[in-house]
Image (spheres, rainbow, N blue to C red):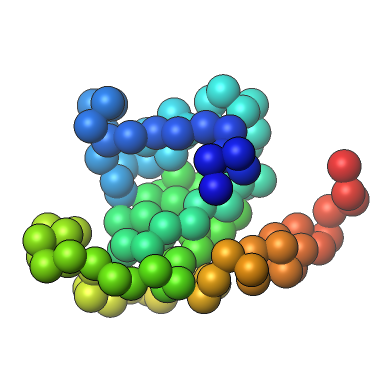
Length: 110
């Protein structure tokens, strides 16, 4: 997946952690893209909540890899419900192109 990612923002390298909107804006800064044109895909409640707080077009919950270790599951509260629920669910990476087509259907292709 790394070849498809143009910007990273890791909490351990920054003064913010998800769901703080600043970490999402930091990831967008080098891309020069408005938050309203961005989609964040993550597996935790803090991912979806942070994307919403930052004004992203969509915060997508990825449920395609749920084989978490016991410690990660407890620390990240992977089973916590997302309230309100995410607008979109991504079940596997093969579904990503269709999801993006749906989210950006009203925009001309670049």
